[in-house]
Length: 215
Image (cartoon, rainbow, N blue to C red; front, side):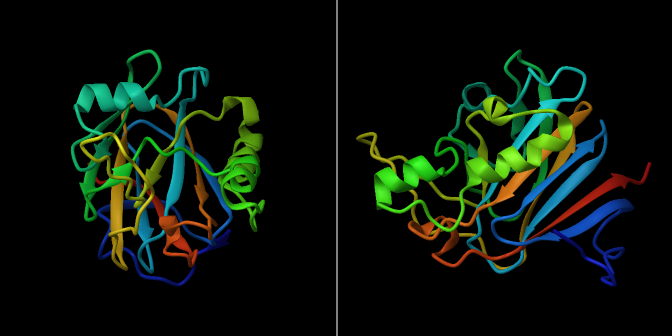
């Protein structure tokens, strides 16, 4: 993970920038995001899935819950206005800006085991292992990984219940911005999947900016 030094972001971010990083494909990202702070995830080249989880800082056993989030929004897609809900029905984050419109919360993350089962290869890396690396600095482990959210990954569901990871629709520069509704631990895995269209068969870097909005 490398710092995005030397880039002017003050024209696009209305607030105090706390961190601005470029995350290579296959790399982890994680930090504590306090209530009121925001993170902006930018798909630099388009069609790049970013696996994401968040946990209550005070009690990380209360974490993002995909089913609760879908039930409360009455939709399988995450988009502007969607609230991310926790296991215990707490508001965790709100999507305040979104230029893509379709983000997945049913497909989960790739793993070496599933890659072998589906594609006969463990792959060059996988998001479950990357999540484990991202969680370690916060005292969390592989057992704390739950069904995650996938920014920019498109997983439509057909009328007969059929579903599949299909070509992403995000364009270069598309972004999603989230406001923290409580103090959180946020982690991400910039997906390195090459066996399905999650990343357009070409994993690429993304940019993640954390900032505190102006009052």
